[in-house]
Image 1 (cartoon, rainbow, N blue to C red):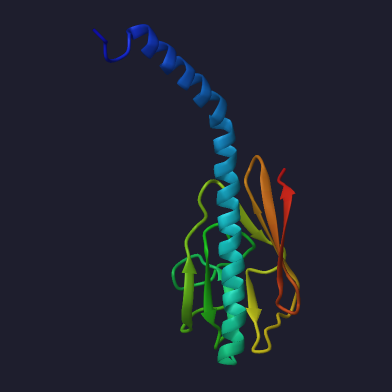
Image 2: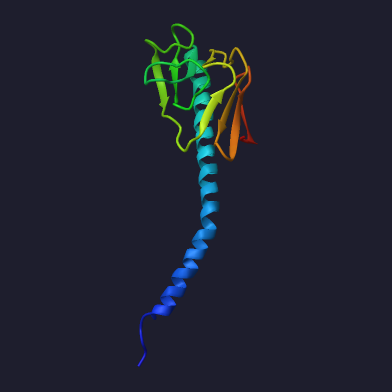
Length: 164
């Protein structure tokens, strides 16, 4: 008469093999998660910069991207980790008070940091250009990062680097 099921020894061996495989795969999976998060956050920033440039050209107005210290105002400094906003800049340069906010991005997750090289904002003019070069550094504390460079023509390029 055939028996169905597993013996206790077969079950314990199967669980042991699964635990060993999981222990070997976990570090690689964590590295993959960090890499995917950095890629997604870089793509979010690049997308919003391209959106700001296209809106400036389409509207014939200055469109600014700044780091947001609230849902309606730009902060000062170069740390963009708390998020950023895109708005039609009709008043004081880099100041969103009274302006139309087009997009708002939340704070970064996963202990990543985002800093800019020069300004707390970047403005695109109706020609699609910006007034100065800007470099953003997106970094995970222990592994890798990306730079996002904005040229004076408004074009965006990205490169990978190792974070300290």
